Length: 322
Image 1: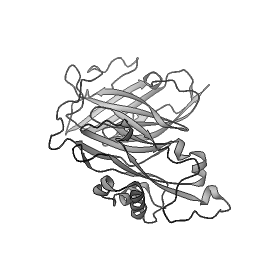
Image 2: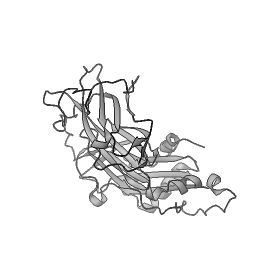
Image 3: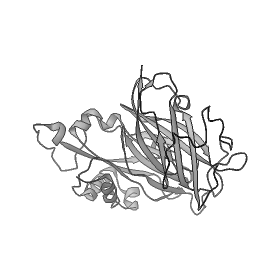
Image 4: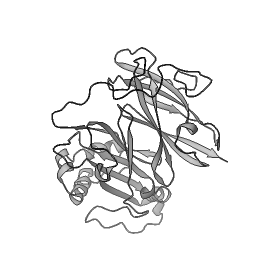
């Protein structure tokens, strides 16, 4: 068994020009050929490093997914998998469902016959799919210059994160702040959420990254859902600025729901209150997820992700009870 990182490296064998020019069937064949029989549990993706609006009419993403029969029965890809795109500088986010796979009907590579039934299909049968998506088709992702972090999720699985730079010919990408921050440049009151300072609940990051602490015990429906984020990221001059000129890191909290591919999203700007040292910004936040999300979470199980600075942290399991 191989890792998703190895699958992502293998999928990188499909070059950018092929991603832009090849048809769907050819891209699937190239994807299967690049994996070359590699077997893994998870999701891997491949996107081009650069797309010129003047020269390209699509923004391709190639997705490779493999899982066993038990996983396919419990988490059918057609009802759980999505490609999520985040613009780290502005915090903009978009999602497209990978709903082209009916439950239990993961396609096999061209020319390969499905395996015969086995005594315990839940454990020994495996299915692998290569799926092509055009992120500009359907208008979900706007055709505009910028840097975009692309990843795929399926309940508690996440893929590698790939970054694509969309340009308009020779025009340089904007170098200054992307917009005004949606938050004041102060921590606020630790007794009231949101709060933008460190608390004992925040995870202490020892190196660059992002992390989220969510309630470890079930939360009663309708109650507050306090979550605590920690950020340690390379400074980005395109981050929004507060009124007092402090940088603010755009953050997106994604909540995956079982059987619904598009996650709920809560976005916020986190002011960088500590001095930036060595080009690295550190910031913290505490927020009531119940108030931040666009709709309440009914009783059930969820998986929570944190997207910031081109990273996707998680998943973190969350349970809501009656």
